[in-house]
Length: 180
Image (tube, rainbow, N blue to C red; front, side):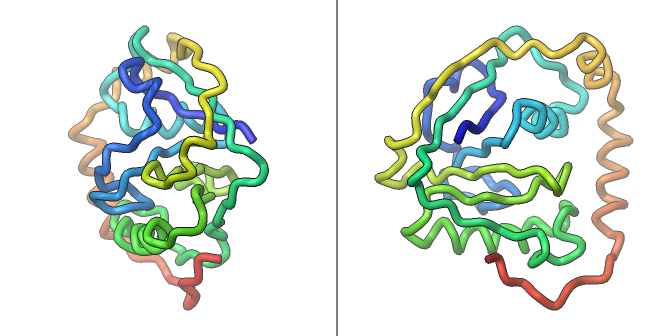
């Protein structure tokens, strides 16, 4: 299976994570987030780059995950209704941290918060099995100028205000918190 990541060229050869807080793992756990398509990898970056565009310094990395690598999956039907909200990071982190701390699966397949019918693949970079994942290709990431125009025209203050408002919105929840 091939998965994709859009990153700055300075980190293209690295198979290690920053250990920063993110949706599926809390701080200190070193993972990299990849996506099932280049388009989804782009969208995931667009949310983090609002107000900033991409420069010629960005690349798409194509990672090859062998078919016999163990992948644990978080099923959408087992998540609460509000798992996509920023205020639900802690809930998602509990699921991801449990996977990370377990020594079995190298990869965690998770639904994308942007498009829940699409998937991201979180890779545990501290696993001794990490050397089984290889960088198959690296290509320049050159998005359409219209996307650049949208990104650089985002009003960051409005976006943060909207995000804070969304985080306060309460939605009904499922009873199940199973992640398999």
